[in-house]
Image 1 (cartoon, rainbow, N blue to C red):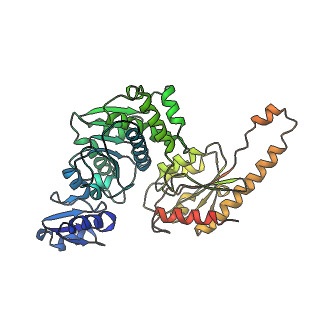
Image 2: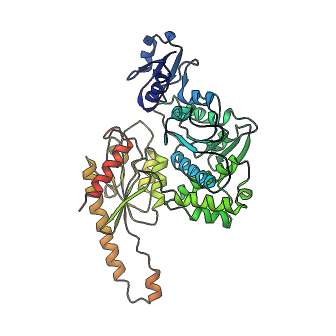
Length: 441
C-alpha cells in the first residue's frame, strides 16, 4: 500500500514504523498548514492518516485511533475528560494488574495506550482477546472516531484546546464520540456533577453509571489508601473503581463483596505513585515544600492545585502561553484564594493576569530561575514567621500544644497555561523547575 501520514510526531512515526515493517510505502507530511494539504496529491495514496493535531477535513481519512478500533481484538476501557485522564488510566491499570495477579482471570496483560502510554498501533498485534486495553483518549484522537470503547469513562469536561478546535461545541462533540457509538452491551461511567460530562454519558446506548459514589466504609477505606494528595485524585480513584466494576459488569458494591477483589483494588490504589508534573512533590527545604504541577495548562487544573493546599500558605508560580482565552476565572482563582499569599507571574499572560489586581499580591519574573528565587524568598519569610508565632504560643498545656497547627508553606508551580512561550512543552517546563529547585542550597 501507498500510505500518507499528515503530521509527524509520536503517532506519525509509529504509523510509519508499523506499515514499513509490513512492506508498505509511507510518506510523512509534516510542518504544514491546513491550506497546504491540497497540494499533497492525496488521491495518489491508498490510505491517508491524520495525526491528532490535524483537523479531520476529509471523511475518507483515517487516524491511528480509528484504525486501532477497526482492527483491535481486545476490549477497551477508554478515558476522556479535560484533566485527570492519565491519572485515572494509571489507577485503572494498577487495579486491574492486582486483580489479575491475585485471581484466576485468564487475561495475560493490561496494555496502556494513548497519550499516557504507547501509541495504540504499537500494541495492535500484541494484544489478544484475553488482554485489556486502557486507552487515554484526547479530543483530537476522538475527533472523527466512529466506534466507541466497551467501557467509556467521562471525567470532568471543561473549556480547553480552543486554539485548535473550531469552537467549544466542536470540542464537546469530539469528546462525545467516546460514548456515541456504544452498543447496549457497553458501559459508560460519567461524572454527574459536570453538565457536559453528564450530557456525553447520557448519549450512550449502554449501561450508564455515575460518580461521585455514595461513600460507605469500604469505599472510604479504598480512597484512604491513596498516597497522592488532593480531592481531585480521590475523584479520579472513584472513576477508576467504577470503571473496573463496569468492565466486570457488576455494581461497585457487588464487586467489593469479594474480599480478594477488595484487597486487590486497595493494593492497586495504594501502589499508585502519581504522575510526573501533576502536583508532584519535589523536595522540602527550610520548612518549605515544593510541588511541580507543570502539567497544568488550563484554568481547571490550576484551580484544583490551589485547592489541594487550601490549608497551607501558598506561593504560586503561574502564567504561560497566551492562547487568547478569557482569563477572568483564572484571575479570581488566584487572587481570591485565601491560601495564595503571593503569585509570581511569568510568560505571555503575566500582564493580563495582573491587570487591575492588588500589586501586593503579585510579582513579575522574566525567567523561571527568577520566579523560583522570588517564590523561595517569600515562602521562607512566611515559614520563619509561622515558626516564631508557633514558638510564642505559651503558656499552653501539652494537649493544646499538640493540637496546634503549624502548616508549612508551599511553593507551587501550576501555570494554568501552555508552555510554548518559554519551553518546549510541559515536561520541559517541569523538568527545568525541578532542576532549579533541587539545586537550591
